[in-house]
Image: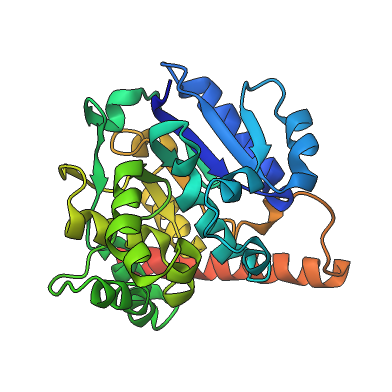
Length: 307
C-alpha cells in the first residue's frame, strides 16, 4: 500500500556525517514516526547502513530509482556532474510508488523542533506548496555579496517559465527541504516532457533547477490545489547570513518559533565532510585563519552599523 507521506534524502559518502546529524534530529523530533528513506550510490550502501543502523532509516541504491523510468539513459546520467544527477534522482523518487508525497531533505538540513504530518499535508493527500519570491536571499546578497546573485536567480528560473509559457512574477519554490507531490511530477511528464520527447534528465540539462520545474508545473498544470507556505527551514546559503544572525542573537531556540529546521549549507561548512581532505595542511590552516579574520571583520562592521 502506498504511503501518504515520507521523508527522503539523496546523499553520498562525502556527506555521511551530515546525514548522521540529520538522522539524529529526525529521531529526536519525528513524533509520528514518519518513515525516512535515504538513497546513495551502490558503493556507499553498506557504509551508510553501518553508520545509521540505530536510526531506523531505509537505505537503498539510487539506481533503483532510475530502473523505474526506462526513458532515462543511465550511462548519460552518470556522465554529468553530481549536482545535476542528484536533481534527477530526487525528482524521480516518486516513481518508486513508495509515497504520494515526500519531503526532500538535503544532508545539511537538521530539524530543530517537533513535527508531524500536519506540518506538511493540508488534508488527505494534498501537501502545502512552497511559494515565495526569494527576498531573504536577494536582500542579503545585495548587501553583503556575492555579487550577481540576482542575475543567477533569474537565470535559473526564467528559462523554465518560458518553456512552460508563463509570464509574470518570478517565484521561488525552494530552498531545501522541498515538499513535493508525485502528482505534480507526473503532470510535468504527461503534459510537457513526453509530448516533447524528453525525460527529466533532458529538462535538467535545459535548465538545472529541479524545484523550479516542480513549481512551474504546479502553477501551469494544477495537479493539486495550491496551499502556499513560506520556506520550512531557515536556510543559510552563505556564512555571512549566519554571522549576521549570531550578532543579532538569533539562535536555534528562537528560530524554532517560525521554522521546522535549519540548513547550514555544506558549500561553506566544509569541516563537516566525511573522509580525509584532499587539500594540504598548509592550505587548510590558511583557510581557517582567513575565515576567522573575515568573520571577525564582518561582525565588527555589522556591530558598528547597528550601534
